[in-house]
Image 1 (cartoon, helix red, strand yellow):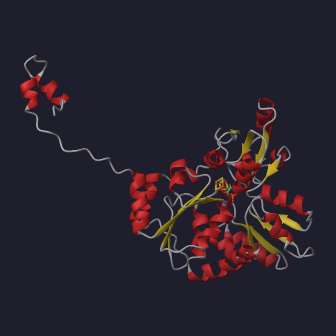
Image 2 (image 1 turned 120 degrees about the horizontal axis):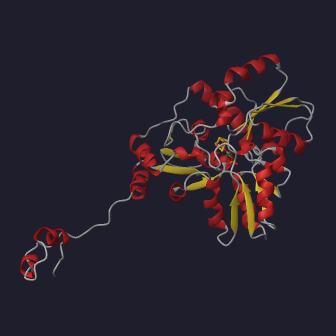
Image 3 (image 1 turned 90 degrees about the vertical axis):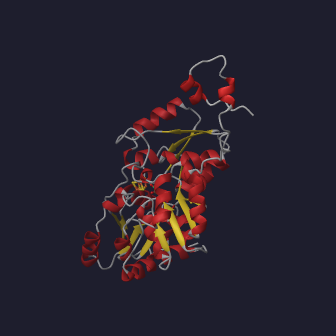
Length: 339
Ligand code: 13P
Ligand code: SF4
């Protein structure tokens, strides 16, 4: 067989009698498909006996490889129920810490250590301890978007999926401190009619900066589209929503809805999950006023390359003090026990 080696043609120039020289070119070795980073990750996953958990806000190429894609509650539950040696957590650090609390003997790694959350940063543990000292009668309900130290100071945890249920499970006469998300706290207070609930003033840099004005414009542009929103959005945005829920609840609701178009008031990484369950439907996103996008800068720190590298190095690894794990497990188990 004649293999045309174009580099050789360039070397020898155009020569009408060159076919004999070209025939002399040795047959190149067979070409094998190059190993992709995705292949490497899948191999490493097997070698490490690892499960790959991913949040809906992760890039599509990460979600595609994940064993489970879900919201914070689903991922916390799945982290508890698996057989294997390691968890590669593609989400933010507090989610991986939660996975470590239920898996103290297993390795938990995150592709990028800097993947934190503005809500975690808004709630330092010293301030929570100070509140506890001054208000020993209050039940502290902590959103899962908190540090492990804050969880250890809490009475019960909640996620966006079960926050109303968690607050309703507490005796009505008991005063509550809800922390740290003020928008979720306001939403829960309205839903439960709970007056004796103090609310921390933390916010999510993505959801809290979705302007109601831009949502109104999107609604005018896409008349007939349903509005779905995450409860971390401001009250003015939630007031315009047809459905409010966690990321997975939003995906499920859009899949089940008769509507064909949706304006989605949450981080735009969720588009991948939405299109998977509802390929024929259309999803519109509204940019926030911080960065004119709808992406979480922390979630987006994780990449395929960093995921591969963290499975090789088994780092960045979540390591937590035993005593903190023991104390954080109590409010976490209380939440997980609520059906
Ligand atoms: P979910 O639990 O609804 O997935 O929310 C996590 C989160 O960080 C939202 O910004
Ligand atoms: Fe935290 Fe907001 Fe990012 Fe969710 S979207 S991880 S709440 S900063």
